[in-house]
Amino acid sequence: MTAAPFGLPPLEPLQLQQENTAQKLKKLKQKWNNYETLSGIAKKDNPKCVVTLPTVIAEEAVDIYNTFTWDEEGNKPRIEKILEKFELFCNPKKNTIHC
Image 1 (cartoon, one colour):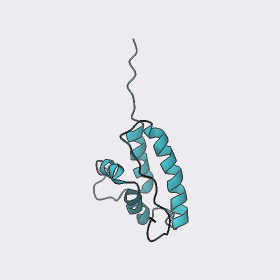
Image 2 (cartoon, rainbow, N blue to C red; image 1 turned 90 degrees about the vertical axis):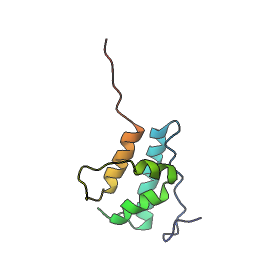
Image 3 (tube, rainbow, N blue to C red; image 1 turned 60 degrees about the vertical axis):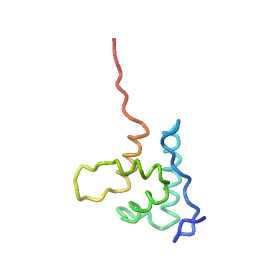
Image 4 (cartoon, rainbow, N blue to C red; image 1 turned 60 degrees about the horizontal axis):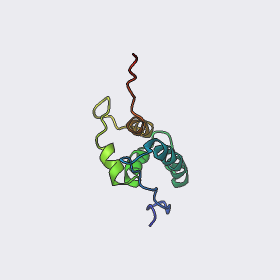
């Protein structure tokens, strides 16, 4: 199966409910950078990136994407912000208790 209309194989599903999500996201980001370049959508603030990423990352990750909130309603998120939100999901801040 290829990712139409680019003729590229689809990205592997981003499964975020399993262990080692930080490593999985790191690999996805590497593959996404290549995918953007090869497909020709890697232009700054390209709205095609914003709709393509959720299309190619698998249903589980889309469910998580749909929970993201954005600072300003009505503003379309940029790809950098989307990846940042996934980063926060995969690497949540941990509270450190000092005794």
